[in-house]
Image (cartoon, rainbow, N blue to C red; front, side):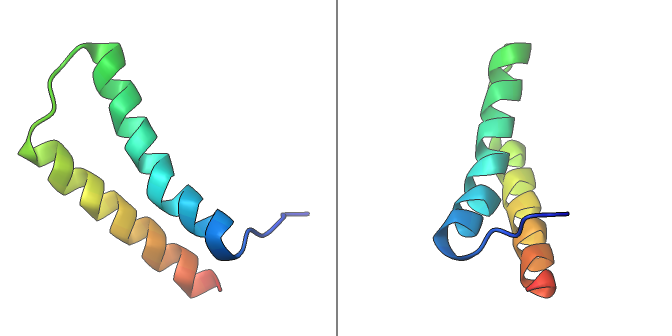
Length: 56
């Protein structure tokens, strides 16, 4: 059975999950962040937020 997150906890997961993922990947690969990383991060966060809202 899946547990459902709600309220601020769910919002934090939606917003912070991709941020930590991109940061960790850049650190692990040793590459600098560019504008394209920011564009991709915004797209991932927007898509994740839309998906979370449609379930809700």
